[in-house]
Image (cartoon, rainbow, N blue to C red; front, side):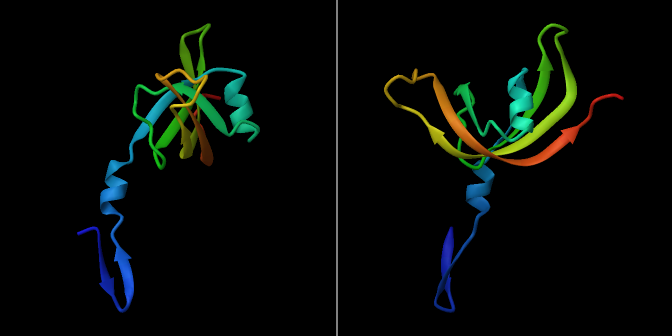
Length: 109
């Protein structure tokens, strides 16, 4: 059961909702990674080949295309809104807004 009445209030279990949330790791190149890190960029346009959902957690990983490597820096975000099926937005893509949860600096010093 998702929820039940208890003392006049609906006690809702989030187990089913949480179990549907996914964690994704996505390459993010410059200058976009820095703009996220500065909190200037709080949205992303992505191919929706992962079936992104509100509540999904994403690790944006700084990626250097010239060297084909990751820096070790990541920003953990949580999707707060998703836009799909709009005129001008290709069906294969989505735009999602997010909240920054954590900065991770795993770069070798």
